[in-house]
Amino acid sequence: ERKKLYSQDLQWLAGMGHEAGLYIGGKELFIVHGSPGDPLYGGIMADADPENLRKSFMTIDCDYAVLGHTHQQMVIRDVVEGATLINPGSVGFPLDGDPKASYTLLDIDKGEIHPRRVLYDPEQTIKDLRYLSPAEKDVLSHIYRTGSYPKG
Image (tube, rainbow, N blue to C red; front, side):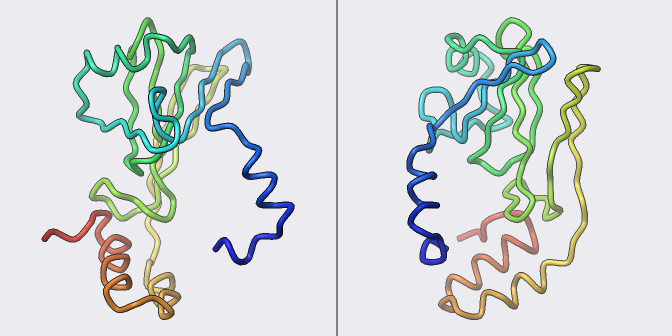
C-alpha cells in the first residue's frame, strides 16, 4: 500500500527505469514488466501470434526476455534468433486459470528453465481483504481461489 511507503522509498521507485538489461554467465537478459513496446502496461499472452511476437522483440538483442504484467506463467523458445521469452507468472495473483503460486527458475549455466507451481491455501489472504468493499473482496477472492477473473 502506497501509504505505508516512506518518501525515500517512493523516490527510489520513481527513479527506477521501466526495463533493464543484465549480463550474467555470458548471457544477456532483458527484463521488463510489460513488453518492449509498452514497458509498463504491455502484455504478452501465451497464445500471441508468433509473427507479432517476432516483431515486438526484433529490436531486443538478448538470450532471455523476462517479463510479467499478465500474471500468466509461460516459456516461449526462439521468439527471435534463439531468444527465449519467460513470464514467471505470479506468486500471489495468478491469472492463468491455475490458483497455485507460480515462479520460474532459470539456470543460466545449464540453459535450463524450470517453471514451478506451489499449492497454497488462499483463505488467510482472503480474510485479510476485510477492509475492501464487498465487490472488491468478491473479485479478489475469486481470483485467489481460481486463478482467473470472474466471468460476467
